[in-house]
Length: 147
Image (tube, rainbow, N blue to C red; front, side, top):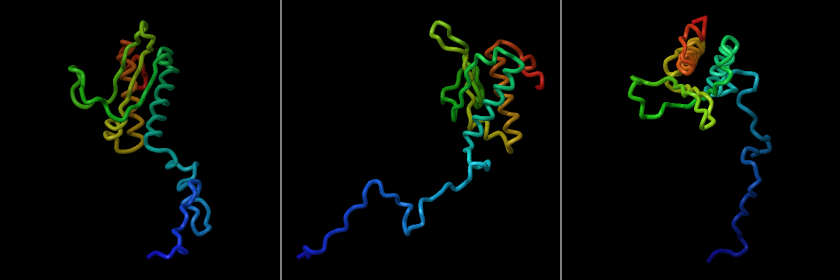
C-alpha cells in the first residue's frame, strides 16, 4: 500500500522556462544579429528578389506596379508550354478582378542551380528580368540594359 505521506511532485507551472535550469539564465541567441547567419536562406533569397525588383524599377517605372512573391516550389502541374522545372511565373493584371500584375519566383529550383551567393544573385536577377519582360510584353534587353 502506498505511503500517503509521500506525494507526487507538483507539476511545474506553465510559465516555467525549461532553459533556466541550474540558475544559468535563459538561453540567448546562437548567432548575433550583426552576422550573416542571423537571417535564414529564405529571407536572404527574398531580399535578392526585392533588390532585383527595386533596381529594375529605377530603370523601368512600370516595374513599380508589379507585385513580387516568392514561393518554395512551383505547383506540380506545369502549363503545357512550360518544359522542365519552372523558375518563375508572371501573371498579367486582371483589372476586372482588381488584381495587379504579379510575378512569382520559386526559391528552391533557383537556389539549387547556384553554387555561391554571387551566382544566386545573378540568377535571381535573370529570372526577375525574364518574368518582367513577359508580363510587360517587352524584350529582356529592354527591361535590363545590363543583361
